[in-house]
Image (cartoon, rainbow, N blue to C red; front, top):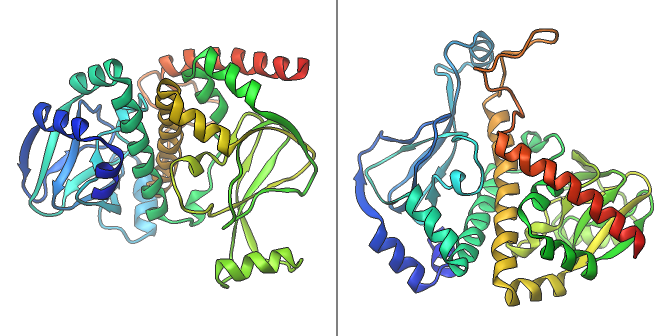
Length: 360
């Protein structure tokens, strides 16, 4: 992944990282990031390999039972690897939750480490750097999701995408989206995004529901595409359902690969469609908007990746229906108070957005 950083960051960005960071050698077997712990350092891998593992709590009997059923000798599971050019510890800059995985050196490696305080200050003071940094993070996260594959573990509960977006964008950004976007009625069974096809816009689901499915047809993508155009049935598997407030087609603005899934309306729906060409132009011309947009996309991808990690690690919680919650226990889907404040603001903005669209 070295080419991602070299392509997305400028020479001045890289020079700042070299001048600010501390280069150090990491012995094989060293745990660089501990699952569940707060992160205070960003690491860039210069050389070597690290493994990503989802660890289980040894005091949780349910975790032990599931590990035993899978013939696992340890309450942990290696799920991916990182190599030169990858970033470790990016979570604090896009998401307030602690590390969802552990990262360990598979061999003697070299990293350059930058403190959270220094990087946060740089992101706040240099909007151009922030734009390039968040875009690079989003691309790396998209690559990790692809690396894990589109197995049944991709299934997840619907994400409150639009609330995360509206909580981080400015009012002027939302005004532009409303002015530029087109409100479209989508009839039941209409395909909005086709697997392997071009994405023409960024879509926000304002009302209705949609399904996300992946093809299980073994023919090559081009053959499948022509088969669909000719009306042939293809075998597909539903992996998620989308509801009011979700965003679709966002990764087309950070990843040149064609979509891996099909998005179809299950009933009559309403979407706000922002044409790809106009959004791409806005991202090039308004660097402040671009930095906020790419941060949002990185946040959404981090949330989806974390859900995948949780399912790979079972993500069992010690909570039973009818039992009181314990303030010392972190429960599934529990949100930080800062995030809750943003979500409240976002909910108000979303209602305002809907009323504006109705007026227009």
